[in-house]
Length: 78
Image (cartoon, rainbow, N blue to C red; front, side):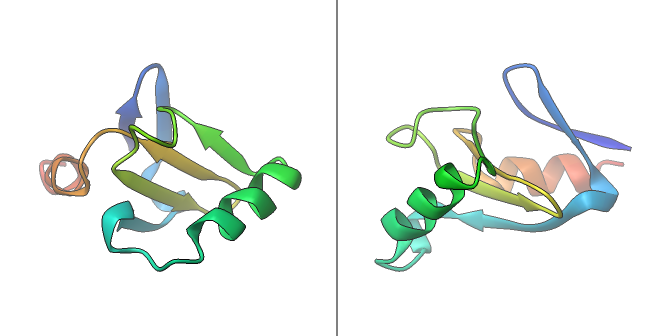
């Protein structure tokens, strides 16, 4: 099964490691995003300013404006 995370992006449910609320992450976010960008592991489905959720998979990290609650509900509906 796949999860639609915004735009034209979908990720496999088996690859999802975590779905995190960006507002509750620590002050080290900027360094985290810079490292991911440098390593080409960050996918901005939405811009960093609009992003509400960080979806971590086994190989990439996605930033999306869809709330973590909505993504969790989509998974539960499967």
